[in-house]
Length: 168
Image 1 (cartoon, one colour):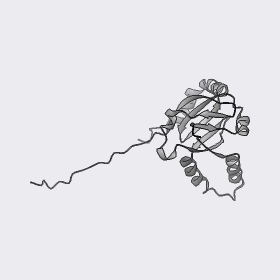
Image 2: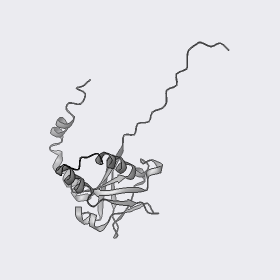
Image 3: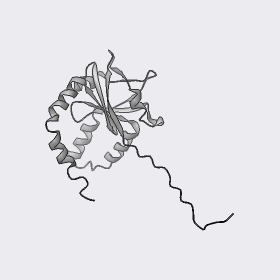
Image 4: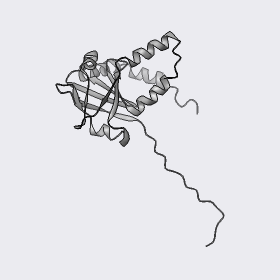
């Protein structure tokens, strides 16, 4: 066997997860449970598809974090200087009402009544998955928010995305 003197180059496969994506319509039952969509569940790592942290969102919705994402966020928040009043207020408001929830044996999540009342969540809901979280909206409120925001979408895109690529 003749050796060329060259070392074979093996490049590892790199899988980049774009984060959670998708929009899913779900029905809440009388107890406040909804069936977690299978397509959304497939986007979660196998070790992290049962436990979530439920919290209020920044608009009139709830936010569901896979537990591994909540833990990453908690690590970042733990570095806040809590001697600053605004930091303490944010920390309190952000964590107020946070509750751990899990999929039951039927693949459903129970949303506590207090959380449903807080955002006006009724029988028809929308799950909006993006990046590291899933927002839970009352269906009518979600489409009202989207409709009222569409007129400003082009300006918003310019403001938020307009300078992307300028560094190249």
